[in-house]
Length: 245
Ligand code: HEC
Image 1 (spheres, rainbow, N blue to C red):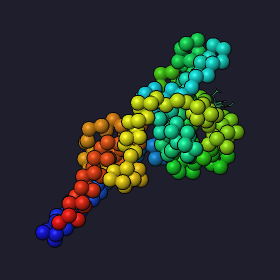
Image 2: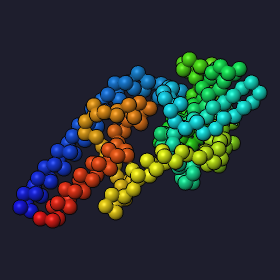
Image 3: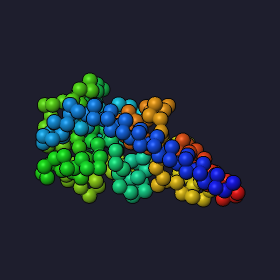
Image 4: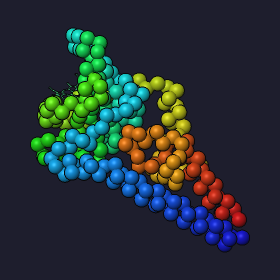
């Protein structure tokens, strides 16, 4: 009985691994397809094509507003980034901070900074702020190529101590809403006493529901929250079952 279960488990694990692998290959191919035309630009010194317009940024946390005469700035970032800052942890890989600029109540520009592992190497040393890159968009979401992005690097470089962010204190002070927080913490709670935060669970089906979570280019296929917990729970149950027999 024990042996049959072991064989069964091995097959299940092998199947899952193959599914994950082929899924990764598919992704790599599709990434190559979509990024094929930008690879030339990546090789050149220009890193401007890397930061895309952050669709749905306004569904993130509007953590502060800055008023300067008839100019109003609305600042947005992800809940994960705010939580990391509040826990005195580094701002996570993949974080996007968006700053809307309204002139006389009309959206005129959208400034974006985005942090990704390895992005610092895209630029010459005099244009490197850690792994952050910058982009300026017009009110209609098109890239403002007239803007000198070097300006963003040199001014934000003054904030190196705060990971190149000017409004780190505002992120620290922002009160995340309680209900959302408790939802978050429920997914962070250990399963059967085993902390699962550092477990990576990949979906084997690339057409899975909820793939809109990956629109922002976070498409590493990793599952989060309840889905992740559910899968881990199933695997742990299987292991438990095996021990019982
Ligand atoms: C002269 C200095 C200066 C320049 C140049 C500058 N910034 Fe900033 N930036 C700031 C300051 C100061 C803030 C804080 C908000 C405020 O006070 O308006 C800020 C805030 C931001 C934020 C919100 C996160 C943060 O750091 O608080 C983003 C995103 C941003 N800037 C992007 C850009 C981009 C993109 C460019 C270039 C197109 C740029 N900035 C150029 C000074 C600068």
